[in-house]
Amino acid sequence: MLKLTPFCLAAVLLLQLPVSVVQAAPVAAKVDQALAAKIDAAIAPMYKADEPGVTVIVTKEGKTVLRKAYGRADVAGKVAMTPDMTLRLGSITKQFTAVAILMLAEEGKLSLSDPITTFLPDYPMQGKIITIEHLLTHTSGIVSFTGKPDYVKGMTRDLTPSAMIDSFKNDALEFEPGTRMKYNNSGYFVLGAIIEKISGVSYANFLEQRIFTPLGMVHTAYEGSEKVPPLRAVGHSKDSDGFVLATPLSMTQPYAAGALVSTVDDLAIWDAAISAGKLLKPDSWARAFTSYKLADGKLTNYGYGWGIDSLRGTPMIAHGGGINGFSTFALRLPEKKVFVAVLANIDGGLASPDFVARKIAAIAAGNPFPVLKAIKSDPAVLAAATGVYQQDEKLLRTVRFAGGKLTMQRGDRSPVEIVPYAKDSYFVPDTFSTFTFERDAKGQVTQLTLHEDGKDIVSKRTGDAPPPAKGFPVSQTTLDAYSGRFELAPRVVLTIKREGDKLIGQVTGQPAYALVAESESVFAVSDVPAKVRFDGNDKLVLLQNGQEYPGSRLK
Image (cartoon, rainbow, N blue to C red; front, side, top):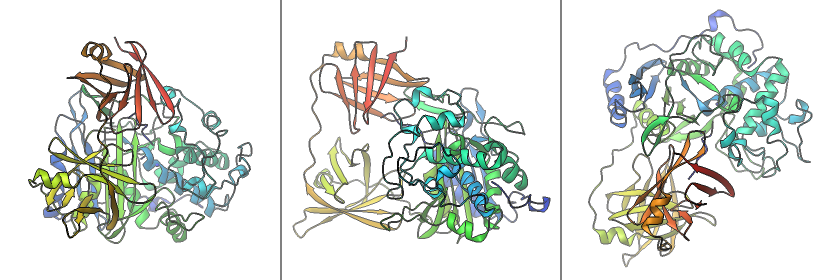
């Protein structure tokens, strides 16, 4: 229920680049107006004029097809978003960090196979060998500091790189380096420290001198070190009261994992430089865009700072970002010469930049996703699809029918509604995932197939769905006494409301969930592995993933 925003969901040249390398942003020459209109029509319904919004750029074959903004840059101030505004990138920062490391490798100042102790000799390796490549690919096993129990409380503290590394370096490794891939902000933080150690300059100055200035990315910087006064969008979160200012965050903490700010124009310049093979040798670019292979031979679908995927059968290189007040996504379709960047000034609660970027990239590439329309379905048909479906030894999907709607829950994630668009065929709104239920000769549903990113994943039905918990009887007087707003961290609030004979809980920027009473004071969060324990009427504790987040009532 309490979601920690990853800087996720973010260079040294052999010679100083001459002025002739400076890239101009792709120009809107001979724009395909019909294509631009199609893309605009796909985006516009997702954003309201008085809510947080996005800046968007779409380029094709080096020409700008669409450059536009939607919604507000500042909801309270009633300031409209404009396409030249600066927003936080979050984890898109990681690709700049990765390129910096590859530049150092090309200069012979490091090797990707070097242990990190080559540059940070005091880093405890715990008897293992953790290489720079492990950091680049999220396969180091190092604990990610954004997932630590005390992270949220300390988000506003200014910390030096060494102090932040000290906060996680002695934690036990989560797995043998190179055997698993687990997204990790700590790894990219350490990469930033290595860049500083080798270059002798700060991470911020390093990127400015070696990437941003040579390429003419004048509006891209480590937040707080901008050379040009930014026209900045305000970051927002969504809670039960509407749109609020995002939780404060010291930008010393995301650092090389997520501290950059930019514009869609500068990201288009960045993509143009990549497409032209600037900054790195071809072999280095190829390595950055190649999926890392684990010790057992399995691919991770992640290279160096970029995810390796496909879109409608076309190879795609992409990365998203999520950071306090902002969410982002940028993708490249090399074969189609399409680039899309979507930067939002809200960290959840509206259409995700990932969904928007994929949708409009498919349109730009000439292979749009089909438009699925909901149909009415017989309740008996919907009910027949309920059950537990097993994908593999670890993953279960549970399908339930209640209130006239069919929902699907993957593992312990929150359930999502699945909507019928054809017989035994369903889609998840605001995603590209579709499901098909298959029946035997007697008409009984025996399996479901997930269709996603060109893949078909089958899950066999193994039994009936367990009934939802009924809950411990708690009086409405007690429920009313528990209702209120409880601060879990600076500007992170858990709002508790009574609706009839039950409680509803909602953390700032996240969906609302029903709270099911297990006792007079302990409530399970529906569909999420978390609990809320009330310690009297003015204090509570959110328990999740073995961690405790105490909250006090706001007066």
